[in-house]
Length: 248
Ligand SMILES: NC(=O)c1ccc[n+]([C@@H]2O[C@H](COP(=O)([O-])OP(=O)(O)OC[C@H]3O[C@@H](n4cnc5c(N)ncnc54)[C@H](OP(=O)(O)O)[C@@H]3O)[C@@H](O)[C@H]2O)c1
Image (cartoon, rainbow, N blue to C red):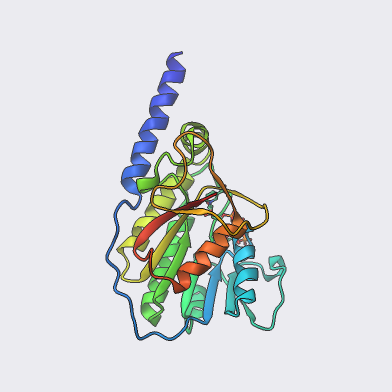
């Protein structure tokens, strides 16, 4: 009983920490209005679940896509408008090379190193932000997660009291660092925080905003719908400088 109470207090304390450490407020972002249409898009994480959806949908929408990937053999797509750049987000030189000449960068980075402290997401994102600033690439759309900043608790009780505190604490803590770096940048940024991801087909109808998700039930959304929403943020300005939740 005492142990349960201690674990419960730990879970609540972590939730409070994630709420305070993640992005909470809207930041004023200067939009470059003279920009032409975005046509050249760099996708990070294109071999992953959301990334594969981003890649397919971006090519369908007519973008000239560059995919920065660690292992090109994992990229299942071939397309005349697709350039594959071998690299690693932790290697600044490869990031800088891929960022040059792009109109926008979209990130679906993730990893599976759950049980040890890591800085993969935050350090990788730091390199991306630095390269974007150096080369005048303004628009950055980045996938993080519900459960951080002003969305703390919105993944539902099961995730808030069990999965995040006991499986993903290091991962989520690094996401708070990632979010803070993005919010401190002078770019046109949108942080997209999805609910629990599924590989279901695209519905095309989902909720988005700063109060999506549920404090009780596990909210979900398909990666295909997240990709649809993220690609919209490349050209729309309504959520600039904010962290926005998405779920069915
Ligand atoms: N799963 C969920 O329910 C859930 C819910 C909310 C939010 N999210 C977040 O959504 C994001 C996407 O998740 P997902 O499951 O769709 O993606 P995923 O399958 O985990 O894919 C992650 C991608 O990041 C790439 N990557 C990792 N480290 C890299 C590095 N150092 N350099 C370059 N690329 C690197 C991976 O490349 P490799 O193929 O080379 O490994 C892969 O393409 C993650 O941040 C995740 O935390 C997930």
